[in-house]
Image (cartoon, rainbow, N blue to C red; front, side):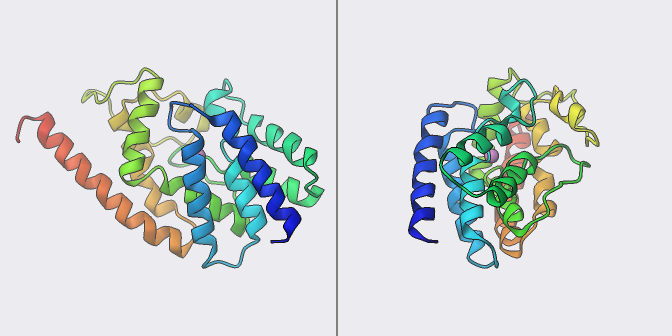
Length: 219
Ligand code: NI
């Protein structure tokens, strides 16, 4: 990256920090920082434009649809305003905004529209942060913020083929593991992402096993 690009990244970090500070549903600045670090890590083994990867990772949850009354375009709109303001060229702005708009998981059977290696890297990084110990912590934080139960044995998990239905799922937090988290390892894009997802996936399976043993009073 050249000096101007490094400066743009620095400014964007401050901007995102300011707008995500104190967020309590698992989409806070620390989530963004982890995704940014993961994305940089994955990018090392891929031929990718690191400037695009870093900016898209930093902006990927700037106005998440979950918090904008279901407005899917809010994130790319806010990103575009910011990137134009700090002088990023039009082609890069378009690419970054496309990633921001399409990075999210939208249901078990909804195909992702991500089509560039930079987007695939950011998507893998975001998905890794939904797995493992951190993924578990974030699932319950998010579920609580949505008024969801920890677990309800009467609710059957659904595999959504429609984003609207996925968004309005009334599932418990444990149900969310079956509607999203456990499916992620098979949806990773890059080789590095796939490898990293395996360990985190195993950890979630162990957690669920323990959870259900305790739920049934077995241990
Ligand atoms: Ni995210």
